[in-house]
Image (cartoon, rainbow, N blue to C red; front, side):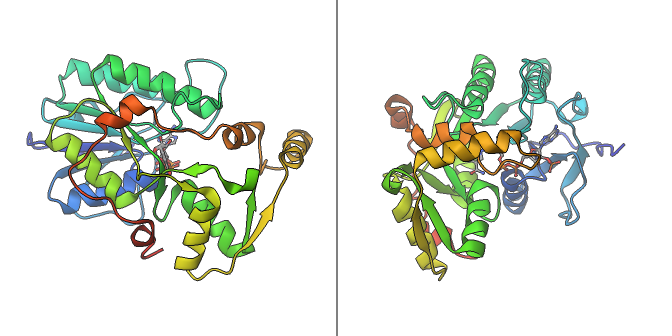
Length: 293
Ligand SMILES: NC(=O)c1ccc[n+]([C@@H]2O[C@H](COP(=O)([O-])OP(=O)(O)OC[C@H]3O[C@@H](n4cnc5c(N)ncnc54)[C@H](OP(=O)(O)O)[C@@H]3O)[C@@H](O)[C@H]2O)c1
């Protein structure tokens, strides 16, 4: 067991998924800004920040209730990628437990890290699940943030960048015209602080506009980071065949039918939600977001 230290009762930010890409960046950001921060994670990180309260947290169990009081701002970044067919999976379970505690202890604000994909027409498991989780958080008058692709040294963008660095290839489908909505990790943290300072509830996108076509986006990334890049058009039928093959092969699938659904129905923001997603500071350009990567 990895117990929480007793906390002072001043305002504090409680972040789940603190070992992950976004969670760990938020821990560093809010700590640096002088907030009292509790970082909830399954494993203690090797590079702990002095002054941050690290607490053991597994989504399958009830979090330490001492963290919840009227000064708490909860930012829920933990997300399990394991797919299940029941509604008692760890993501729904965690959401219910956290919201129950939030209500019992009348915490100040609850922020859920959703996604641009939530409820999109793609019909992927991820899109459906994020929408279900959003519904739970919305019923509790929470703040729901829907980031686009987050640019930083982790997450899906960084995985793609690592593959591009290794292979120097960019596979594209449909001429690579799919819109990419992105946000830098720094701007995502600033948006999160903004909704805290203004105590904004409701649903907000965190993304740059306009979107950039997929091929232009990755060509810009490659040029900015001096990566020689060769674009390789790949027909959808070939990806579908590969996805079927991966289903029967005893190896980790590099492409799934959900990936293909996502490619064919790229999420676009809901105009009504987009209208309220206005923040009074400028976001970083793509080139600036890529610095230090
Ligand atoms: N990255 C993006 O571009 C992006 C874009 C839009 C939305 N989002 C959303 O933002 C959230 C955070 O994303 P991320 O990129 O930071 O993902 P990540 O790096 O995979 O982090 C996920 C976090 O969840 C934790 N977690 C997973 N299963 C858990 C469990 N059973 N109990 C406790 N913790 C558990 C992980 O802990 P371990 O380290 O122990 O596995 C990790 O700390 C996700 O909801 C994601 O959908 C991300």
